[in-house]
Length: 268
Image (cartoon, rainbow, N blue to C red; front, top):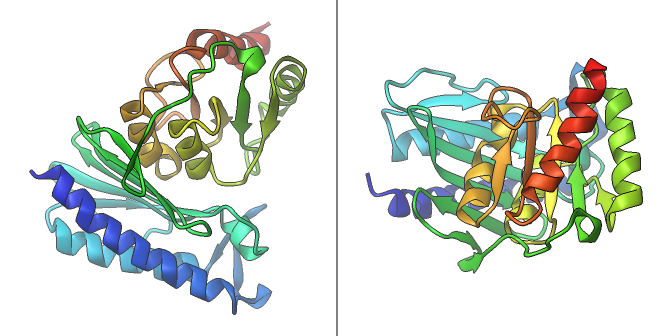
């Protein structure tokens, strides 16, 4: 499979869908909001965007299955699967607040081989494919070279459904506020992670995430020189609903801090 060509074609679809989302934002009304649960919202824009993406991606790779946040056209493929988040940062979108993004990834069996994150408000397209470099709007990007957590800028996301780890999470915020350049919460995990890939953030961690939140950005970070793990330092970051990622220089230090607070502290 020509992953580079597939990535180019998929970017066209993603950017066109992003323009649809941006146009709809200007005439969006609170009357269009549906609730999937407490603090968990969906709009007709999410649904229409997903339909556009599913339809277009099926044309590019008809044999691929679909794993998508809003459930449009879910089906199982024999080898390939697209993992789709049509609007990561819906709450931001509802309030007219950037960032919000489209995230799509292609899995070949258990391996992510293509990833695109398109931050819509600034029209920034981050992408990579297996064995490629990582790119932002055609320019190669790399993770930062920050070498200590004390010098780093860290991103995270706040839990909005699962609060079982809220106490250690709040402690982790306190720790990083006191021992880093600061903590940022933008409201779009895909964007946070894309910003790690291009060096704007040095590290990111969050729990309660789904595969469509992280799949595309993980590949982009890895191709940009970054590292990934779950809260135990293992590889269950796609389905395990928790992720740690950073540049290679602070990875061990950052991972150990998050693990000590979010895992070991709970067990004490």
